[in-house]
Picture 1 (spheres, rainbow, N blue to C red):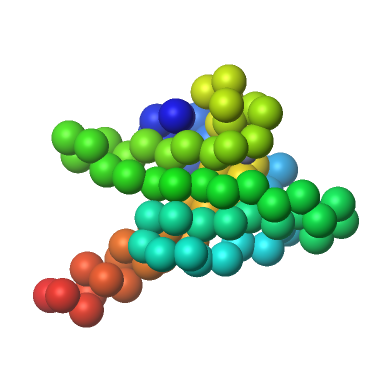
Picture 2 (picture 1 turned 90 degrees about the vertical axis):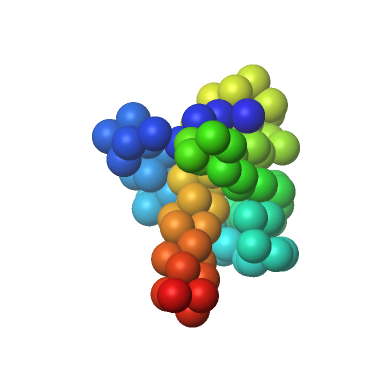
Length: 91
Ligand SMILES: [Zn+2]
């Protein structure tokens, strides 16, 4: 479980996500699968909000050790767009 903080803290993971360009699928709001198109490896990322702070969890080796992997960065990007859209829809 990693805490999603600033884009600066996520920079390395975001840069890697931009380089790898994984495919992100929305399973449901807050649950995503991230696939590396080169290797075919797919990991599941979940995002949740606790006490106003965002957390994410990835089932890859790095994510299991609490590291900010690029899967989390890729899924968080999709999650933030979805969260903004649902906020617009419910407004
Ligand atoms: Zn991961």
